[in-house]
Length: 144
Image 1 (cartoon, rainbow, N blue to C red):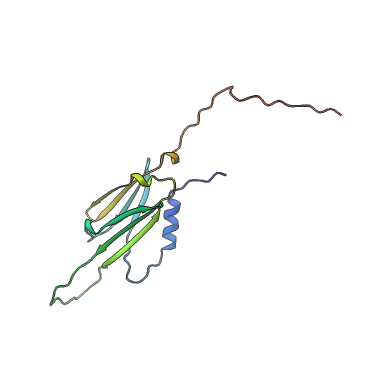
Image 2: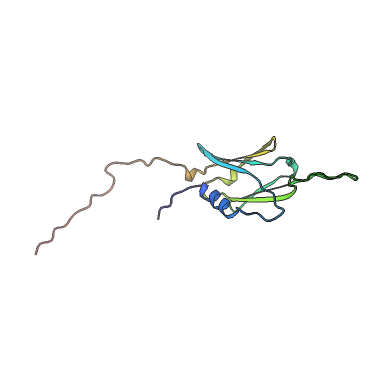
């Protein structure tokens, strides 16, 4: 059986399931796209420090976790408190077409960038045709 391999199918499925978030969780904008032989993921994490990031892969599930806090000092009176803070975790299924062993991560200016190579087995390849190597099919005639 043949299946169309779409590494973004899992991203789409994840986004469709997570349109509502429980109270207190942080909304984390993310872009994902394929460019040549890599899938690039950009996650906006303003106010997060690199040492609070936790990125791991287990069974082709990429998990990104982080914490964003602001500690009030004694005597502070908050007039507004709109910026979300706390911990969050986001999971994305990578699928078989991506090489989870070779993921690279970079964190700069509040943006986490992941480069996930497309697995060799998922890359298109040319099939060579060799003439004259298969046996000919013989036909039989039936007479009554």
